[in-house]
Length: 290
Ligand SMILES: Nc1nc2c(ncn2[C@@H]2O[C@H](COP(=O)(O)OP(=O)(O)O)[C@@H](O)[C@H]2O)c(=O)[nH]1
Ligand SMILES: [Mg+2]
Image 1 (cartoon, rainbow, N blue to C red):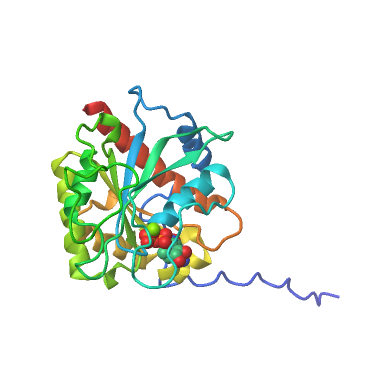
Image 2: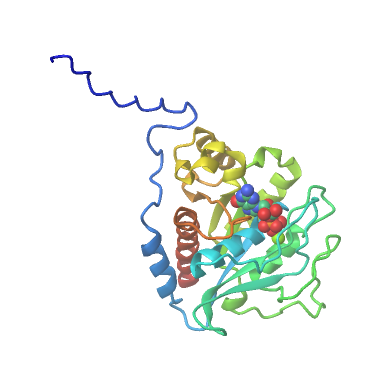
C-alpha cells in the first residue's frame, strides 16, 4: 500500500573536466555565422579597383593552404580542395607567389579579396622565402607567378618585379598562420616571423594571427569545438603566442581548418568566418587610411 518506491533520481551531472573552464574566457562567436557570412557576401571595397590583398605567412605545414580551402569551404558550403596542402616532410610545396580568389555565385565571379600564399618558413634558415622577398611582396613589387629562390631575393631586373605597384598590388593585411603546436617552432622561425611582423608594422599593414590545428593539439576541442574558448590549454597557448610573437591576444583567432572532413559544419564555419570578417575589416581600414 504505502510501499511506493521513490522515483529514481536523475544521475548527477558529470564533474567538469579539469582541462575545461566552466565559462568561456573570451566570448566565442557562436550564433554569429549568419551575420558574418552576410558581411562577407555584401563586402565591397570602398575604394574602386581595389581587391583586398591578404598575405598568409607562417611555418611550413602550419595550415596556410588549408586556411584558404577552409574559407572557400565555409563560404560556399562545400569542402574545397583547391590550394594544394602539404603531405609529409618539412618542405614547402608552395614555391610560387600565387593569388587565390574565391568564386562567388556563378563561374567567373569572385569575392573582392585575394589570398596570397607565400612559400613557408622552413626549418633550416637556407630554405623558404627570404624576409627581403616578403617585404617586396608586401610593397607590391612581386608579380603573381614568381618562383621563390631561397638563396636570393627578387631583383629589380626580374620580369616578375613590378616597378610601379598600385594600391591594388600592395598587401593590405598580413595573416600569420601559427600551428597550435607552436612550441615545436625553432628559434629561427620565430626570428623570421618577428622580422616580417616588424616590417609589416613599419609599413602600417595590420596583422592578425590564426592559430590552427586546435583540434590536433587539444583533445577537448577535438571532442567539441565549442570548447575552444574554455580550454585551459588553448588559453595558455594564445598567451604564449602573444608573448613570443608579440600579437595582442585579441588579434589571435583560433581556427580549425577543414582537413579531412567531407562536409562543412556550422561551428567550424563560425570560427573561420569570424576570423575572415576581422581580416576584411582590418584590411579595409588600412586601404581607406592610405
Ligand atoms: N588536424 C588538423 N590538421 C590540419 C589543420 N590545418 C591543416 N592541417 C593539416 O596540416 C597539414 C599541412 O597543412 P597545409 O595547409 O598544407 O600547410 P601550409 O604548408 O601552411 O600550406 C595538412 O596535412 C593539413 O591537412 C587543422 O586545423 N587541423
Ligand atoms: Mg601551402
